[in-house]
Amino acid sequence: MQFGFSYVGLIFLVMLMVPNLIWTKHQPKDYEKYVKNENKLLLALERIGEVLVSALALVFADFNWRPWTAWSWWLIAAFGLMLLYELFWLRYFRSEKTMRDFYSSLLGIPVAGATLPVLAFLLLAIYGKNPILGAAVVVLGVGHIGIHWMHKKEAELQCGQSAR
Figure (cartoon, rainbow, N blue to C red):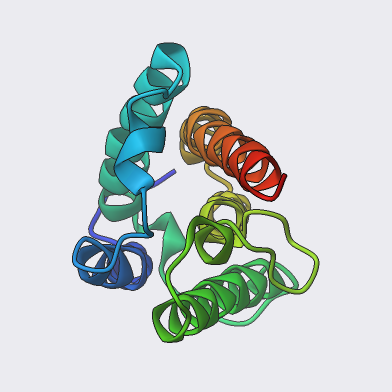
């Protein structure tokens, strides 16, 4: 593992943050009522993971492009997942912006808005042969995907009750 600035990490973080900043003005209807029920342990894991992944993605040069090897496929796959993440957001921003839209699947990937970036950063850690980022991604994934999965289930219950 080599310390140094990662422009690839910066690109991934920009791809992650820009849609999230736009989302703050286009949250799903009734989103706030789900936030107040979040599991505190999952929320702590999510926050710790966000800080660690963001910092680690920037401070290791291991994630930058290197001459082509078989390991390069890990970076290509990670970037592909980030492109799918952008596609998820385009679809969401064009939708009615309901909880169902926000927690939808993409190409069979459940809660795609939470799952895709976590998987992308995990593949980035594999590409960089960086177990520190890998461990941080696991912490983030447990918290972030866990929270979104719980919101999705709660929203499904609400929809089921209102349909009766």
